[in-house]
Length: 375
Image (cartoon, rainbow, N blue to C red; front, side, top):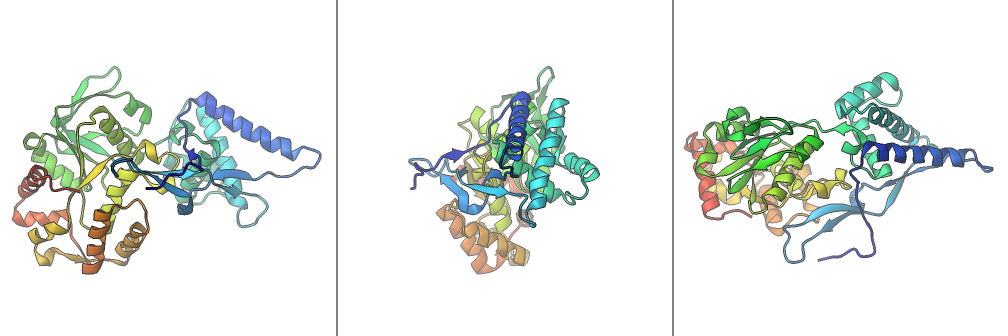
């Protein structure tokens, strides 16, 4: 176990619009002050370094259950004085300008909406969504406030079903067990999610990697046999789904959270994002991390799957595996599973369990839970 007493843990504040606008104004005033002094200069922008070399891991004193990723107080620069970095420098100011306008109008936008707006007003600076996404994280690192505080709303793909009652402010109670296989759509408005009133008589929360598997479990009403809440982000988790899961973990701390993912490096990466957070959002990662157990698929489940259903690992799988292996957050049992995937050169998808019948998936989950067969 390592402690970082000599390094400050950096995080992004959740701030009201007036405070964020004030921070933007201070950044502008500091820039102008240096530009107009007796020895004028164009000041660099100091951002919290988001590279993996600045990643640190916080671990619980007795277990690894409360492990999460954070960034330490190490900086990188955006500068106008280097040709290859000038555009990144300008992008930060453009995004801050746009966020200031959004907050002044008391509006919120998605990253996609922000991209198209910037594409129209600054086509020479922005040509891709990735540039906008990275610049937003630069602004988060500069102003030390959350993305949501900047007026940027999460674009949510997530849905939830099962034994959960939800009530939005001034709205009727929604029974998620009666939402059918479509589930309850998770809002991208984090403020709304934070104000949800939640009640449950479930005993488990089950993360489902795939939308189709979620639909099968919801249609079969698995949550009636296994008193549970089902949640999916339909692949890699978006912020809103992670935020709601984190809220449920705090509201119902006695409920274990388990993940049902494909037995491949991408499935493990999805589990790790829910469990530890992501390095790209290191300043906010702790706010979305949860103690997630790996229910399946795992190596000892391969005996349930026909050999013909196993698929060879692709180059992309091996890339993800290499990245995971280099991560200090990866627990030993997870590392062993990953090594087995790479050694076998194979991957298995949850759907392969349908070999035993379409109703087998619920029985598989129930047996795993009863036997406490998760890591």
